[in-house]
Image (spheres, rainbow, N blue to C red):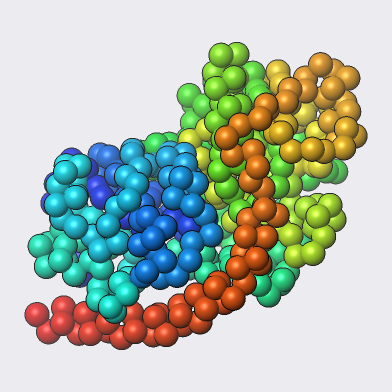
Length: 384
């Protein structure tokens, strides 16, 4: 049901949602939508509409727009899009079809938000990414669980991050270019004891040519948020002037937990890697990057490192000591979203714990109702 219409590849596509924490599930939906058509317009609901129909948001509209804007498969974000999809709004942006995951979303009255566009034959289904949602992430914060963490990567032949073909397939999909159909970024794995990086996904020839000169930036990138995104945008801005590609080093879960404690990171290395790969400002990533970018590690990268960047958050000098000695270190100056970090977001949730716990409970009965609507919809299509 709701199969791909003929000629959709020549059409503008509409997608809408809350996009609270733009996690890899959101990015996966945008990727699939972009693969269907020539452009993707992404409607983003207001804070007030989401509160009325779903519960309190964690990220503000401005922050959520920033994140959607940075997704390489998003042509244009559309703020304040109505919670119940309106064909007239779609028409205003020249979008012929709306794409949504294979679940049902309801408004405050329990009505299907997409019923009108379904009745008009404008609705197309893509596969929903399992095991990740804003609700899941808020749950991890409230429960302080570490069950989602991966063990340190010490051996390429025996690690849960890499032993599933589905994980490697996901890296390849999220590394695609802005069309979602061709090769794009490179994906590499660092194992401290090995002399070279392991290539998990080959970059495109165009990206590979850019690797001759590299701007390197590293971090945890937990709850991939506007603070990270704006920092990467500024690095990209500088890198373009210098003719550099941007390679992002991603610390593993064990490294981050050693530094931050508690149950950090909230997103595991697989989830964080996909979030970074979907970002338009990134040309390649290195999984398992060391906390300190030493000269020995930087020599493994697929090109000459021209600069090592770090954001405006305070760190001890030691991790970047060699980069500073070699004249490679560059600071990303203060910016509009510099006040946002992972702890800041977690505090937002914990400071409104009762409201978010109520949202978690509401999600339960709402999900049951939406599941019943889906069964009814499937029965109607089978009988028709």
